[in-house]
Length: 191
Image (cartoon, rainbow, N blue to C red; front, side):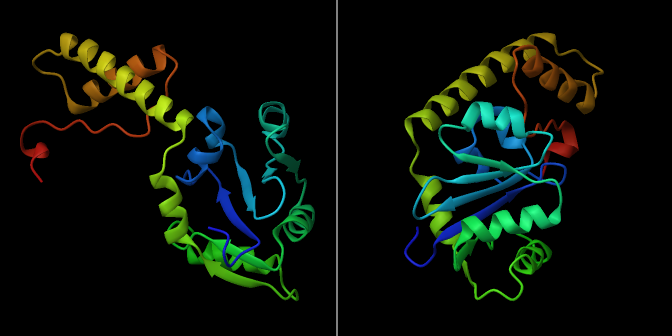
């Protein structure tokens, strides 16, 4: 994965979207924390945290990652320049053109080369760690449990939104978030 780059930048701003790669490196609810993950060829990975999440991220991952926060664009820019190196990988599959343009702007005047490493990142997700396998198994078990509960409560006249709400509420009761929930009846269930 690091054949041609010193680091890989993975921005994560959940108000807009959650980068799927963050799940591999920041497990659980922390994958919704805003910031930028820098995977480095040499040295520990770095998470540049939005100030709102800094203390929580530092507490949970301070031994695994270098955790920094920023108070403004200048601080953020300096941190990126300090930890990224001269050859930077980005995920062309999930980063918008605007996001890449913005990232490149933080290195204006610096001799930096950019590489699309999306295929390498995709390949890294194919091999699951023990923790990822545990989490997938846990999610499958919880999904089966919630399905049984919701099916037992179904009644004629319920809307798709009613059933979706039931699913979301059952997951929340057990302390889980849902990535998405699709409920479709009748003609809506046809593609």
